[in-house]
Length: 544
Image 1 (cartoon, rainbow, N blue to C red):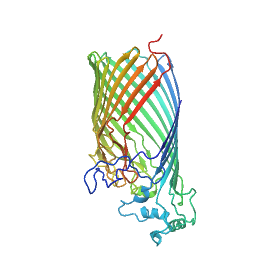
Image 2: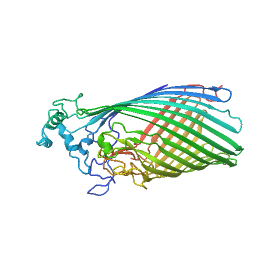
Image 3: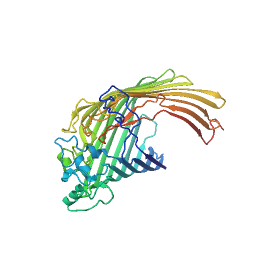
Image 4: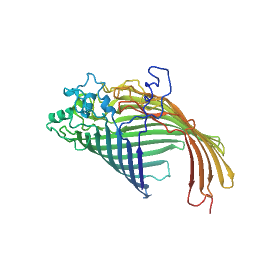
């Protein structure tokens, strides 16, 4: 059983344009290059996050004669509340629409904060600031159960079979607030009169748009896996999984002054996934293998979409996307097992790629999911561990990925471009560490450790999948290093460590957000100096 609570106040991202007219390449529009200003934000409303998570686990296993039976059950629940400033919506709404939207744009929305406005024949006057923020509350609970039976370890033939059941309920409430709303203003009066409720005021102060919904998701899986040793050094593996899901949603909401009616939807899917592999040990300490495996993400539907969104090509349903992995690799140990080297090469065709799209020019009120095209991934990964002496250990891992779109399934504003790289997938990534440990006194060991992590450059979005008319951003690669020095005393149970993370104080971009109509960077944690002291209860190492 576990319980976790997290409270966060303020913004965790920054606007790189603050402090100078900076474009997306980090250059002054009318001047020479300079570094992007760091740790700068501009918010005009509250921002906070609250998370509560609870978990309850039950596990039962035993020998039932023909095999080992395992039953596992987990109940998990999480309550979230997010308050986020969203004033950019008031400024940039539909500014990229072609042809221009004359009924739902920044001018019409800002007019609701004024007493008079040019839309109703008068100039702007008596205006409050055009700010907006939203409150998003969500409750998710999930109950899962798994029952599996597997053979004992003797003999050349091994098998495993089982079933899995999982039920998820997701309840959410979202309200968009305009604190400066002028219910006595011309635009407000004209709007409420148009909808037959003249003079009406929202149910909550500043309530502009509200939305409530519930979705239920049930999945069941039956699976079986077998391995057989054809020869002492040759083994094959086969497996298959049958997946079934049922999902439904009930949504209610919109601009409160408009007629509202519940929106419901449901669906289901079936999928078979299989895998096959063969492994061979030509030498002691060397294993080579070839694998083939399938995977997928379930489909669903975009519930509660206004008719204007579907008229612009937004799909009501999206189908599962499937990924097939073809892999060749080896696992080797050398030099009396002081060297361990694992390497794999893979190719993965990706069909009906799912992605989340948010573009107010297509669907002003909500984001939606769509199958935008096909893609493929090929690459390699390698892990090397070396212990040249009992006191010194070295580890290094690297990966190379080339992930690109191969074809487009859609047309229009959210069509992808064949050949473009998939987002958040760098070409090169690597990490390594070196650790030296030696006795300092009887019962006390000291150690020093150096860690290095690198991630290559990567795009933040698909080229034309919907980004409010803003260009996608190529996030630069970065390298971060950490240093640790410590003392361990298993006899006294005390452990002490001094550490410095991000030694070079690298100001790296780890996430780019353009969903608020502007450019926002989330950067990594700056350099941190720390001291960690811990005490462990229990029998000392080596004690009788």
